[in-house]
Length: 615
Image 1 (cartoon, rainbow, N blue to C red):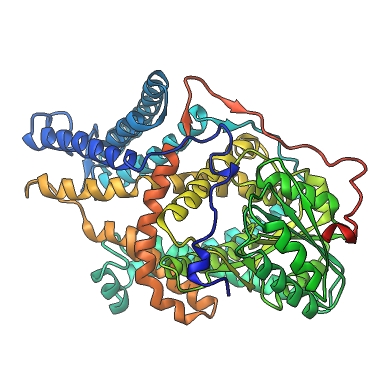
Image 2 (image 1 turned 30 degrees about the horizontal axis):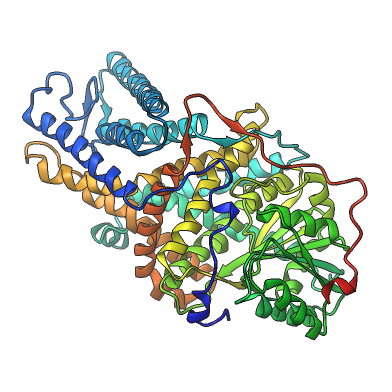
């Protein structure tokens, strides 16, 4: 357990990484609400003009759609997108000129893509005589909007300079077979569910868990990932060796952690005693202004199973502390543990079992909340879904990008092949595990490893954390841009990173989309198809709840089902912070790339810390 709630509130959460030195700007609390209000006014004006019918001879769908179509769509997505782009440009960080150029860039690109869609629809109608479904046209327009927004953010936002990703041998043939076979099974199951009358699916649609769009696409993804999850568990169990316990080095970066660092070291000592092999612990005091270093030294002296040292790194930024720790590490396996993370007794032993396979380069676990905090229930479901279910499934398809940096074990050989942790950006842990995987090493999250990691207890702390985390998707994608743009195929580069960007854009627009749906419902007359609310609720709530329930049961944590209502609220809060995170990215007049620190390791690393350094 982490310290009591009263002690957790003492956490100092501001650091050099909060604004990522030149790659982020502070966001006033009033900026996102002002954006939402401006967006609502812009959207309302356009919906009102459409409702008056003056544009029916051009845009009969009451949206900016040209050409023939059949059916209806759930929401006027093009009106929504253009309204959001303009409102975002008004309140984005940057000069007026930069924001105007951003607005023109994103709007013109989006309009061009929509015109291509409409011209294709018109051509299809002229050739076949059958109009294209409006729902399909609008779904494609929605994805186009997410993609354009992410692309222009990376193009015009202040981003890390791209650094080529060195690629080793990738198991592409095996990956194609796995994705193909599991995708075929998922398609068959979801098609059967969509076409076969079934009381269960009818009831799920009625209560908007599957919604008016039917069970097809939702079940397709759930069945697909469930199969990959099973493959990942089978593969892990086939390769692990329970008696594999080599000596390990543990590095603990710490910045103003006096309230927790002593307990963290004590938990490491207990895990080392259970592990039963040599364990060295290197605490790196990263410019703390409290008693972090003194408490760490005193605690290490009382430990029985570890040998440790406390080093001082004055340069602000976690990456600098991590790099110093790696250089001082003695052994062939390096464990990174955050100063506010409490490992369980068997965590080290379970993690090292995976490294009996020489192809494994990095292993992580599931960062469980301590309990008792306001955000802990929602966070519990979040980590089970993301790290306990989707991450293992992605590893089976060679698609795992990030491993939680709170607790991760690296093969030292892989670490030294990649180079130092990148400083001056958000997401240095994701960037690092991505590059290890692209070298050809297997990276995985072992859901048996459940460690306790701090969850913010205040809105201010959660906001600071999530702005960093969500901004890191753009930083990592910009830094590893060669994976996305190169002709060489990579599941991470061609599928997962683009999906992460699309999903981040979607989440940033989620609260404005809900507001837009309400406006459209209120202003649209009965003569025009109203938004299909079953479909909207299914996408916003129903589908995530089904995925969460599946992940909870797969991880054998049934008590977490009680936290599903809290997870709904937590997701809404997460969407709001994603919007604020996008607003924190400085928009530039021209494409701006900032060179940040990443160097090869010195040929002769500094000597290992002497025992007396802990005194």
